[in-house]
Image 1 (spheres, rainbow, N blue to C red):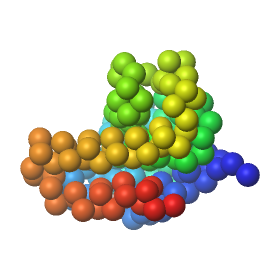
Image 2 (spheres, rainbow, N blue to C red):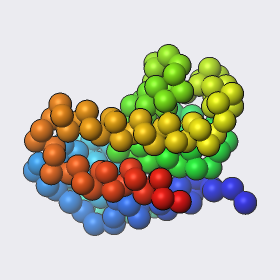
Image 3 (cartoon, one colour):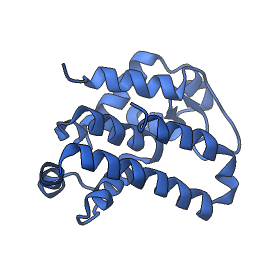
Image 4 (tube, rainbow, N blue to C red):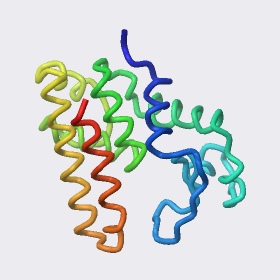
Length: 170
């Protein structure tokens, strides 16, 4: 039986946590369930406060994930369960376009950040298991570059690496 979008979102929320955070060093700002203030404002189409983020329900967070991190970027078109979960999780941490570019770089196709037929065909041609491994490696490389380019984010690196390598353990 395949992994449903709901199962993928369960995993994202488990990794992100269910508590409100507002760490001044976190570039995401106020966050709950992994949903940032910026993402919540975009979803609602209006400015929101940190208190609005703190009051976010899991049901609304799940709807945001399904629409903005699965459907809108087209990640549901990735038919391999493991690869789809990895790409969605990468999109949650770094944005769907960045996750798509990571996948495209792993597949060695034009990295335009749009998941289209060329990218999907490359997954098919390469094989999902090879694409998965390459994507996992690309994500770790991305994290390394992120910390190199933004040393002030190094305190988050261990957590990001634990999250990234979790996908290599199953």
